[in-house]
Length: 138
Image 1: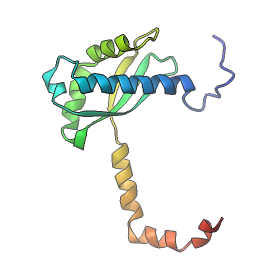
Image 2: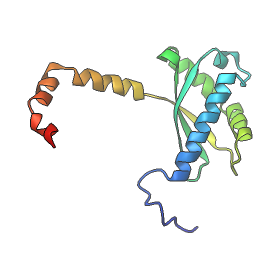
Image 3: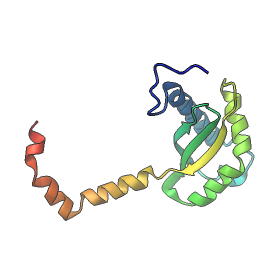
Image 4: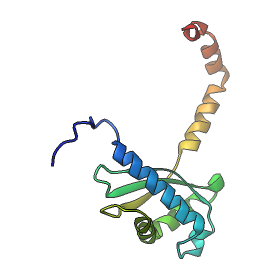
């Protein structure tokens, strides 16, 4: 297979990003409409924060979080249990050569943001940041 001369391989390609975003939107719509025939899954309001695809676009990892973060493990188990049906519904709405295998992972972005805010609000960190005002004068 020919190498892509426009992609250096250090991160996801434009195609991976574009397909990941399309899968994210489609998956969000499917979950919002409640198209899956599982009442346990449909009772959760699930946010799909990001979808990352493999370079061959055959595997898509969706980073999800139930609204409010409550019952996260239960929602994740329901998503994994219904991955086949979700794959079918997503593939039906898209025009890809292969329907990507869907994997679900809890999105920890919000937890990391909270940890960062908490860390930056600590007195010793605030003193350190305030003691170097010359960094801001560029």
